[in-house]
Amino acid sequence: MAVYLVTGAAGFIGANYVHLLLEWEPDAQVIAVDYLGVAGNRANLDPVRDRITFEQTDIADFGAMSALYRRYRPDHVVNFAAESHNDRAILAPSAFMRSNALGAQVMLECSRLHPVRSHLHVSTIEVYGELPADAQWFTERSPLNAKTPYSAAKAAGDQMVRAYMATYPDMNIRLTHCANNFGPYQLPEKLIPLAVTNVLRGRKIPVYGDGLQSRDWLHVADHCAAVHRVLHAELDPIPAAAATDPGLLPIFDISARHEVSNLDIATLVVTELGLAPEEWIEHVPDRPNHDRRYVIDPVKLETELGWRPTREFAPEMAATVAWYRDHRDWWEAILADKGELGIDWSQLPAGTS
Image 1 (cartoon, one colour):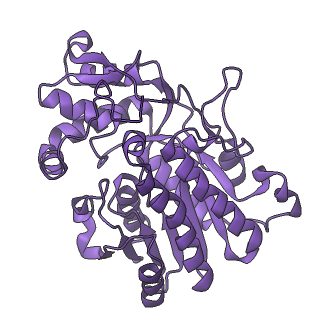
Image 2 (cartoon, rainbow, N blue to C red):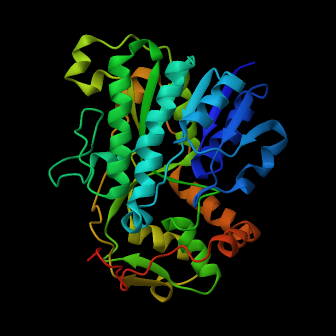
Image 3 (spheres, one colour):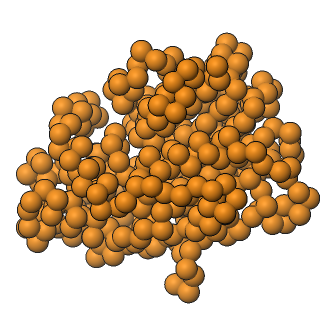
């Protein structure tokens, strides 16, 4: 029976991964770790709570995490834990550095001192920054060029992961970057659940600026399947040439190659709810330093590991909107606990203009 230590397990992607992992491997022992910050919600794990061990622990706390490694002796580690909202990072960047950079290093060090069979660090497309106008997409060879506090903190974590890969080649570390995810259990501060929950409360959907910021969209179940494939892949040793070619490192970019603008996402949500987009969408002041476009190419993952997305965007978007419509108690409890999650950039906090 394999033991999995999954961090960020009460968050959106982490919770979906835990649910799916227990479908794929019903006998797995799952240690679900989350410090239950802004994005963590214990209720996300309710469907599997009798089949997991939950630990409320901060991944940046070396002593606490080392104790968990000693207690459970994990075979596989998947680190989803991260502060992940660009808006909040503009207001409070220090928390993002703690989780996304220091937390990444603490997890790596725990896996080094208490060896595991595989350690996978989950990162984001945003570490590559904004896609140049003359570029088709980012790849694993693209330079890290993060431009927001959130993505810079994730890029710092990426750099530490790459350093451990090169310095400790026997550790069996893997790194993934994903496109924008959508699906159930996403905190209603992100575009799709914010849009649905606003409309269901009789509020308009706030679209930043002209709404033509373009994103690469991936269903969370496809992302989780790719993570699991990378985690268990039999990979060749890291070659010496990887010192100057990051494409040769065990890094895999995950995408369904489905690019949609923020305005089109808002329009899809309103239309799916049977309403008129022109009556339910409002353009609001853009957030500072907003990336215009990013897309990644999953060809390495497809050719080397045989992964393909299986979820079609249109039906899964409809199912996602329906999930938030049908789980009103879930998101109303979050809003009652955390308060309003949207940020009005017309009231700029000091130092953000």
